[in-house]
Image (tube, rainbow, N blue to C red; front, top):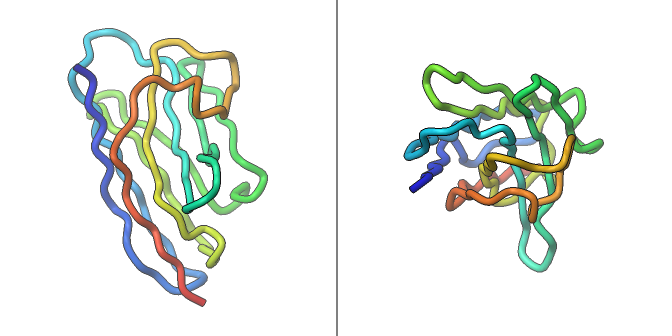
Length: 124
């Protein structure tokens, strides 16, 4: 059973930084698609950054130049480095993965496995 566990969330002031970590376990096949999503109450879950087995990466326009996604295959870990945080970045952040997905997708329904989330709160 694939398990994803996020950590690294917290409360910071605008302009600050956080690094989210997702520990992935319980799989014995390649998870081609991985990503970070976020959700605020009353809104749909949105893609923040996704990374694929061919090395390609996509970012939401709202985080380009501020966030960086990376993965360590040896440690089975996915990261999201967030800098220059803004109050509008406040959300629950989720790690997600899938063995297969449409090329370059940032759509939440394309990802099969999900963590429980870690809260990020940015104050002005």
